[in-house]
Length: 349
Image (cartoon, rainbow, N blue to C red; front, top):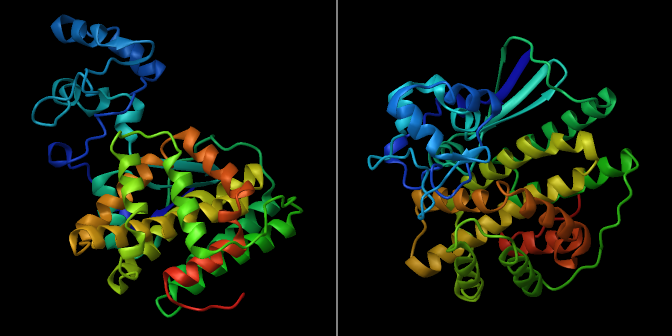
């Protein structure tokens, strides 16, 4: 089968103890059945330690929410003691993600990881394909719809990655293309088309994000602080445009094809656009608060955003619902926000 992935993923390496935001902290780590069965057979003191620190199918986190096997050097005791093959599935694969469509497998590395975020922001978005052994993992889907969505996504990616196309124009194109695609597949569009003022819309968008369930307790206060700094924040920095294009491409590649199962092409396209806009606003707020927003700052902000949204199923469901019901997320409103954010007037394409 064909395995399709962004080129930068081939260079991804976990930085382990050098990571400033370890995935071994703050996450409930589920243990798959096969690994749990293996751990049950490990003998000696380490085997006892394993079993003493597992309950209800996951590791028992410490009071500061650290995995019990994360040592003081930031390394995994299971890895160093038993080897990489003894890691549970989620630990071995994170932050990788995969989708299967018949004889096509797609995947990448998630933006929620520090090392992956820096790769995503620093490299042009280019797809790489290779032949891999067949994996029977795809659900049933309409092949004609699949072909159409591949073309839709390719068109979106080509536009947003084209440096000659203003980013504002590219983001509007994504929304318009998604709307056309939804009409082509007879998806009922119930979302509100009302346009509200840009300043009001941005504040409401920030409010929507502040209502999500936080993973890090510092996230919601940070969002609210940023909302109060928007008026004094500088315009979008031209140096950040390439980072934002790559962020948009990441979300488009990862999510648009999910609509083959639920038809929500507008919702996933909106998520890509809103994520890009919201991260841009956070870049601006960082500049207002600290006088600048470096590449490292940008990667950190994007990583934190990803962790707090797409890596919480409940938050993703809330956002997709907001996109359908809230005036601040209507296509007309978002296009007005895009124009204001990037100071670029664009017409419908």
